[in-house]
Length: 378
Image 1 (cartoon, helix red, strand yellow):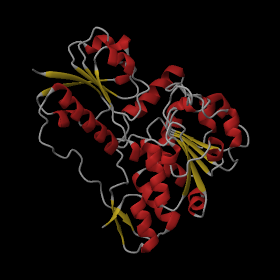
Image 2 (spheres, rainbow, N blue to C red):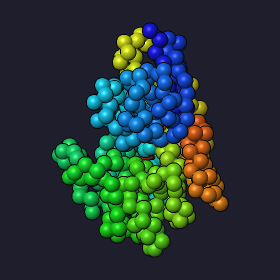
Image 3 (tube, helix red, strand yellow):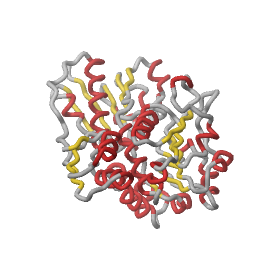
């Protein structure tokens, strides 16, 4: 039996991991329609595709996979009722998002120095991304407070109340978007919460746009308040132009878009698909070549070393400039299309983690920072 799989055009490596026994067709995820599923047995999507009964009813699809860590775009209750197997990719893009946060911190003046000199980071959400970010920061010697009421508090080192977390030098949002009681995350950060933050703080949202009340955020960024970095936007791809104008950095929901993370997610989904359909997986072969060695020529230490390494792999200013350029003068329809195009045509970005670094003199402190970033010395 030949299995046919319809795959979002932005999921790389699927053909490689599934092998020649599976027929793969590509589609634009945001524009996917029920008629497009005719003749397909499985569907692999990203977060731009709303997967529900309206999309799948009447199709032969018996497997749905999303190449994302979150799944608020998938009606899992319907899939279960329709006996459709579901898979996602928890943790696949966690390293990419962590490195996006590091890039945002490194871009904000002397904030990185401030953290390494005894400042603190507050993390909201202790899942795949939040927990990995905390481990990285603590390995760098940075203090962290964590808010996640859904978990056993004894299992979280540095567990704290939300107000305490919000008073940190940097606040990072990494919670799932949920309306479930007793701790819904929709508009978790609103006017009152923003007022709890320090005026010289940095707020980074790389979770879901609706975790923050957009109207309250617009008010806060228009007065004395924290600097804001947004990778996610309420109602995206319909961005609020006034909010983009006021944030410190804005990007097109690409924090988790490293090539390594995308390939990791594809591999995870393909493994589940093979199991679901009882297929024999092809012999494992690497899909990505090792990333280029990073060369550190100057004798750098502390924040200067971290900033140099992070920027060597990822230029957050470039993504900010691309989004602002795409939105400038665009009408609503054109802006939506431009936002999606930035994501669809996103250039390959390799992760810093796992990189080899060539440097003549690092010293004990530099070597420790290298290990915290999961790099190795050549």
